[in-house]
Image (cartoon, rainbow, N blue to C red):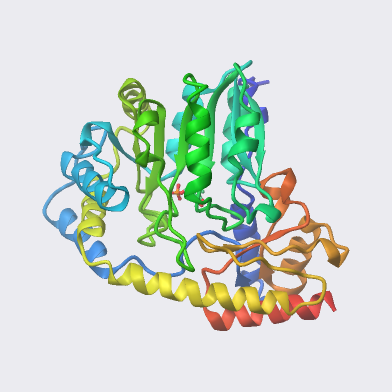
Length: 388
Ligand code: PLP
């Protein structure tokens, strides 16, 4: 029998992809499916970005680029970082990655090993825990609670750090709960981290433009005192509706940069040149489409909250960021995953059960409001009718 290393027994998955596959199967069988499961904007990539990629292909950009990305693309990311966060970052610290996910893969691989502890948000993006377990490190969940507006608590996070902690993963605005952690809390976290100079921090800021109701995103780049141990995960997928392009970037402190560059040389060589040119167009071009998308998300967010709260036994907190709502279904009598599965099988509405994002997700389901207002209304009406 073939024997692979034990890490592969521990590696997990993202159930959103399994739900997507099942939803497509049911749709092929003729069922009318409304997908509130998958976390990707339902908008097309803006036209000028697509045109930039087509032009790059026509102009003959068909070969390898440097493993860390073209200088032009890294310079574009540096410009965008300066405008968004006020932080000056050298293109020499920026890596162009094949998607946002690959940065967490690389960072966790760099710090995870048996005996090491890695802190990650629960509920949180499922790949954090999956990759931590793959490396043999111990995953330490940081609770993300509704009573704390789904923000992380600096005090609680700091209380979980010890001499074995190698990496702290934070995410704001957050998937799956839609929480935005306020600046005051991040100030406290950074202050407390002074005591733990050997702990690296990976801040997943992929939803950085996606905040509502006047909330603002606080980048960890604003704190020079932790820059020498800070990894920033970001990318094009969500902001410019480019999930399928596989375009991400990360910012690394100097001592780690060569590791990730070598990982690229060993694994993916580089991101394809036309996508990098499209990435530059996304950053430097007009942002009207982003603004329009955010306005649509905001309207849908209000609709989801209003309609979900009108269902007996369900309460839905108003999300402040990203494009997810995380309604509390604990008073319906359903286990979250059973409810999500039955909603799909019986009503054609795809959602994700909270436990797919961590143990503290029990009692919740995640609704992605990356769908039209009409479909959101139809979906929530089906959920209401099913629960009655
Ligand atoms: N980080 C978070 C919090 C996400 O929700 C996602 C995607 O859903 C990613 C990272 C990965 O993004 P990408 O599709 O660019 O790999």
